[in-house]
Image (cartoon, rainbow, N blue to C red):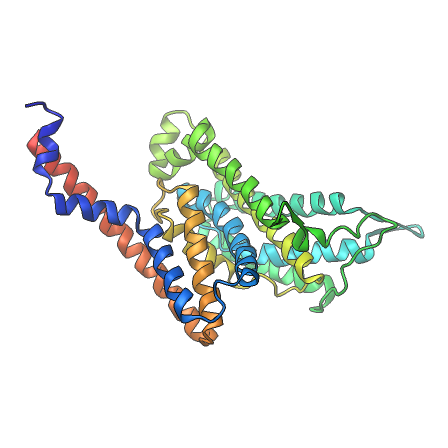
Length: 352
């Protein structure tokens, strides 16, 4: 009898089946919530609702992708919701006012330039988070919590707490196409979905196919060991927070384009949905483990759950409670999976 066959026989088939179910828990959860709301919520499967729901999922998925990299590296980013609001306000200000350096003249921007500026703002805020964590040794929770308040306050200061309305843009400056980011379609799909596909593919490629991705996992799994192996830990941490800031900036652009308006309170509690999607998708809060594909599925679970509860008329208070329970359940199941995998490994070694 071969050595390869011996360990498999020492592990009960029921244990193996349970382990497979735990690994596929996100897909199972998605199927269950989708089937439930298909019967419980009126018009849930209508084309219009599916399109709207896909846009909502895209917003959460953008943030969750960036959050996945941060959590895999052993950190957390609580500032993404505030970055969304601030970046939306920056976009609104540039569309309505441009830049006025004085001397009786102003600088106006087209849609591409506005998007680039807003993305640079998001990356810069992420870089500030990375600097606080890597150079000043501030704990990620505290650093990003502080940035959360700073960005939210800055968003309020942009307009004294008021909304920037009517962001339809000016055709003379080439900013009238801004609304296409959130409302446009291409090949039958919303532009925001195509943007999500592009970002998800890039992130998945980085995570699975590049040395950078391997370093991110290494830093989260064993930061000291990664440093001793020559990994530039601080650079890796700086990258993941900058990438998270970029993802938040994209969400700020999409929301302000969809609403044709920018409000400083946009993005409140978005970080909770992003964390929930990442954890539900299999990303370990202790770092070192997670997949972009699982995060996307987790974002779909959170999106379907949120929209389905709204369509059923469930109170927003109960929705918050349910999302909290989902996060707790996801962490509990993740811990159960790790313990079961460790037990299976020990049984396999004992039977070798």
